[in-house]
Image (cartoon, rainbow, N blue to C red; front, side, top):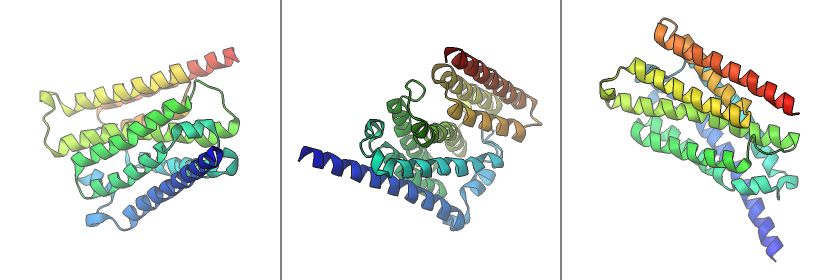
Length: 260
């Protein structure tokens, strides 16, 4: 009886997770085809937030294609009968479902221009992903190749971008509400945020050898540098951070190869 209840719980988790990912994708697609108030997320970023310096160049947002490709792989892999009793997936529970639902809520809030509320929705995406990342032991435990490609890489990439997106979301919400930055220029604040993002990615590399997470940060840094190519300060900070991450990444790969 207990085994039967356990199997039923696992099946429910699998199906709910699968459905949540698909629904989040559909909401994202519809938000671009039939945007609320006539403006897509990209259009709002390019108009209302054109002065928010931390927002990367438009092409950077194409990473959502890779993110959803990974999430589809995760959703399909975890719903397989062979993964029903996977202890790592059991540890994550409904965390991805929470993040997916929060993603849909965020889209609605942002398009409705409830920017402060959208920050809380973004945090509701970020926090479950962080917990999921830690529960999966990414970079600290050995797993099969399938689990690495279909569970760990998708979560690392998704968390990597949401980490960047959270910084952008907060900066945008503060900007639209005329925050004066305590008298510190937007340029300096942007440089500080770039350094913080780089620091977090460097930790992921050094402690967990997580190339996927750090690669996403690298993608964002290059896009920031390209967007602000005429701004020498931001260009230097973004490019320096880029080269630093590359150096740390190469060092991390070298150390890992020595261990193996």
